[in-house]
Image 1: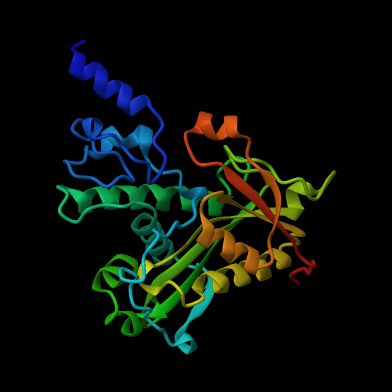
Image 2 (image 1 turned 45 degrees about the vertical axis):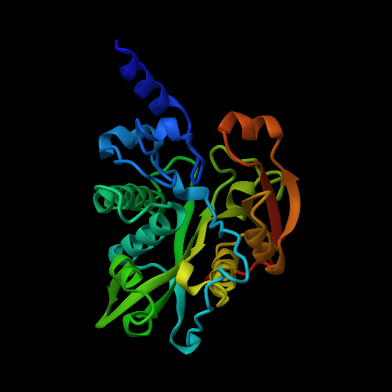
Length: 294
């Protein structure tokens, strides 16, 4: 095997967390997912070993100065709908928002639109499997979205409208915020919640994942809105203990969860974070009063 082929194989086998920094020498061989790409992206089949496991990522806004901070765009919340996704087209729109949020691409990159679509298809398929109950370890999964009419978003972002639009009845709407509610004992590669203990924990414990808001519409309280709806759905499922993981250095996300009533329960060991090649995670918990759906 030639030296160049050995290098490429080594890169494809190595873990690559989202938004990781890649050494400039590596980017000449392959532009990895989630990096600031300056080279041609690999075709989809080369990205299978580093493709997204989006079930447990949260949005991490980049720090801004007063001079660089974008102007806040206010939305009319009377048009906002926050509810569980009920159609495949809405799930597809949610998958597109997640790819748009969790990956950082440069618009001039070659083949970028094809690669974005590949990632969205990957997430859409995984989301469908989790909701259908065919993913081992997940008892029940719901995708909860915040949506606005297309007419309310069209003047804000043409790209957001094109990427995340779906039809609901006779109306065109756009997914502007999303998360997953997962009824399960644990999440793969994550520290496990300790409540409740004993028999029944698999029915009474749940985790929030994929929490994100369209970058153009941040600071409108949309994160609080989707979390509040998730609490209602969780209570109706009989969930008594709700968890979420967050990176220790993700201050905006931590503030969102703390203001939503979550408290710290545990912290990922440093060795596990090093082994998984990612920032350490905090495990946050909130207790819910139980109500049951009739």
